[in-house]
Image (tube, rainbow over the protein chains, first blue to last red):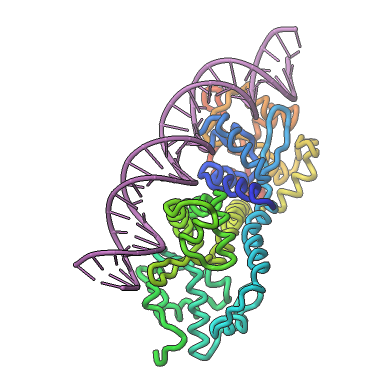
Length: 198
Length: 198
DNA sequence: TTAATAATTCGATATATATCTAATTAGATA
DNA sequence: TATCTAATTAGATATATATCGAATTATTAA
């Protein structure tokens, strides 16, 4: 996918009205006036948005007499969603041979992570475990609050035992919990694999 | 993920300059002036874009003397890329959940509807008839009022015997009539094919 | 403390776009 | 044919935002 297509795709998803339309269409196909009614907007506005969604390849339409029903194209959405990530991985791979940065942590990660980025197991050794926890922690954003359900989902991308990882993230002060909501600690508080003792 | 964060995420990826920045960062971390130089832009512009990328959780930064190096957060990019798709799947599942008979209903619909969506006949069996009525009801929009003439026309898309279908829609509480104007009942009032009795 | 450098903030401007009303088009019906 | 309805187009407006130069802040160096 070329850059312009990618931009149009993300532009299509960068508007609250269009997201609401997609959510509606995820329930069932709908015609223009029905969408307008449900969203409290006028038909021309819907035409405007459907044009963008169509150009982004996210919907198809089926005509029934005078009425046009719009359908969500789930598979296209999923496929295009990942295309930027794929593009950046390719870019990285093209560049890889120039970079020979091997440090200790990288080799731990290579050993414990699958190519898909999942944890083969949770290391028992403290040094390695800290390195892994640090890697998991970098998946989160500073200053952002994560409710329990959400943090579990994110951790589960690394390992199914999200409860253990979540507890360890707290124990080693990568994160803290306040009223059931989790947040990263500042990087200064993070332990390094080199430190001894707990 | 909340809708607003999802929108900010896609907004962040909906700009050519920011995509170029992400591509640069996929090769290696870079500091602001380096990015500005490579893209032929001025530092304030880079600050502007990095703010958006940071808020979208796509980059982190590391300070080295006076210089701030920006790093791409691949994990977060990949995870957020799929979150809309997940959201729509959840929405769909929730919808199906409220109507456990979806699969059963689907097979009824396949049997009684032509490819054009017209009714071959009105089922005699109560279960099947309810499923068909529900399908017809979803052609209408909640909160919208339909005068008799209009509702007849709409029902006639499904079957020429609109009088029977209209009467049944009322009888089974998919709709109600007030002063000759028809309107959908809330979905909670709709019967399911499973219910017995009338 | 003063100087140097990278980054940021502020204010201005140009472009993009979400939304509407009014008018028009396209398709189906009588 | 004339008519009805859904959708679209055109034009207007308001808001958002990408970019810049000028001024300011933050951090390090002398």
